[in-house]
Structure formats: structure tokens, C-alpha cells
Image (cartoon, rainbow, N blue to C red; front, side):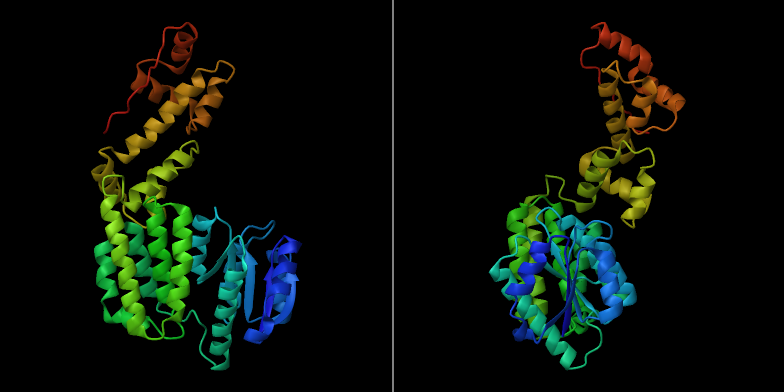
Length: 360
């Protein structure tokens, strides 16, 4: 079984290549690459069975490489090495059928798990099975969307359906791994401690691969689901809805980008804008567009207190692309123009003037 290793750290490449017990899975090292572009050249030349790659790399990273493998090399398995702070980044790789991860730091125990996974892949190849991510795309999409919406009733219905049961193949079980990944990502969005979550996820993946029948795997997924629901119930008063948690995070990180808007956010979540607005308001008591506007207004007020920042820059850094609109918006919600606010603040007449954005 031909394998290539991809990492921009030569010590990691040397360490993995030397420590792995290649004979366990009848493997041979077909080459090493320092980034995704070098890996692509190796892929085209060597046609490996497995690619083991770091996520964070210069030029072409592991996610881009996973996409290339998904689109161009349907018979090649992809295993990603992800760092402690890269769990959110790693979830993007699910769309490219990456279901195996090694979490840094890479210990002997984790390499043992990797060797066991490689042994399973070798067995699949020897039995001449179809590509391991052969799975009902429509079904996987339904599961993913239900979890992103936080529609756990729909997830529960899917778990007991014949569709899911028949898709939990003994050897090509991509759907089950996707379900586990999504369930753990959902827990992360609910605020569970990342250290404990990463450890639980690694343990669950290892246990899941050892199950031999569809029924055992379905029962295991159901147990994970009910554990999650119990945790979510305990978090229900803390913005437990993953849609809301995701929206709050996006708004706080991207409000200064004038191209960021609520419609784009709804599109990202594959939800209608009215539905997103309803979910957000039911959970927070606030209108989502008003929350975004309030973030931008608060930022503008803070920037205006620094007289060295030109008004035009205050406008752009607060998420507005039109100075005239910005001035009109600011006056509407504070009762004064940006320049008047700055002058009053400089003169000591403004204490903590925080304008509130009214809901439409």
C-alpha cells in the first residue's frame, strides 16, 4: 500500500516515517512533500493509496489538498493531521470526505491508532471494495443540514430510519463517521471544553471503528446522540442553539467587513433569512440585523474617541462603505453626527454615550 506524507515541518515527516511500523499494514513510503503543491506532483506520479497530510501549510494547505484528492483521485484515502486550535478548520474537510484525523501532539498511542486505521484500509483494498467514501450524498447532506440547523428531532428521526441503517456499511461506513464528527462539532458550538471534547472525539472514533455490525454502530451513534441531547438540555439557557452561537461568532468577528451582511450569513447556513431571523430573536430577544448594526455603532463610537483616526477611516473600520450613509446612520441612533460626537467627547461632555439600535 503506497503512502505519501505531507507536512512543512521536516522533523514531523522524519518522525512519522521512522516510527510507523510499516510492515503492520504492508505499507511503503512513496514520498514526502512540504506542502500541497509538492504533494500534487507526487500524487500524479505515484498514485498513492493514502495521503497523510498536515492541515496548516504554506502555499497550498491540507484542506486544498483534500479537495484536490476528492475531485481528482477518487480511489485515494485522505488522513489529516490537525492542531489543537484547528478543529473548526478541520470540519470543512468533511465536505471532501475526510473522516480520519490525527490530533497533535502526535504520540505513540495516536500512531498506534493510525496504524490500525491503515490496516483496515489495507484490508478494504485487498477485498477490492468500491471507494471508501461511496455513500448516499443526498442522505449525508440531509444529516449535515439538520445538525447545522440544530434540528435534533430530525437527526433522531434519521437515526432510526432504514436509510441510515442500510448506509452504515460494515466496511465503507462514511455516513457514521460523518455523524460522529457533526455530533462533536455540535457540542463544540454549545461551548463544551475543547480539551475534553477532543479527547472524547478521539476515543469515540477509535471505539466506532472497532464495531463490526451495522446494528452495533447504530446503537453507538444513538448513545452519542442522547448524551449530546442531555448536555444541550443543560445549556438551553446559554444560547444553546448552534445557529445562534454561529451567528454571534460570525457577527463579532466580521462586522467590520462592509461586505458582511445577514443575507450572506443565512446563505452560509443554508437557511432562509426569515427563518434565521426568527431563530435568532427567539433565542436572544434581539433582531439579528439590529444586533449587527449595534456592533458597528459601538465600534464607531469607540474609534471616534481617538481624534487621530480620520472620520472616513472610522466609517470603513466600523463596517460601512459609504461615509454619507454612515453619518446618517450614526445621527439616527445617537442624535448627533460623528464629528459632533467626537467634539463632545474631546470636550469631556460625553461619558458613556452608547446609542441603541431600534428594531425595525
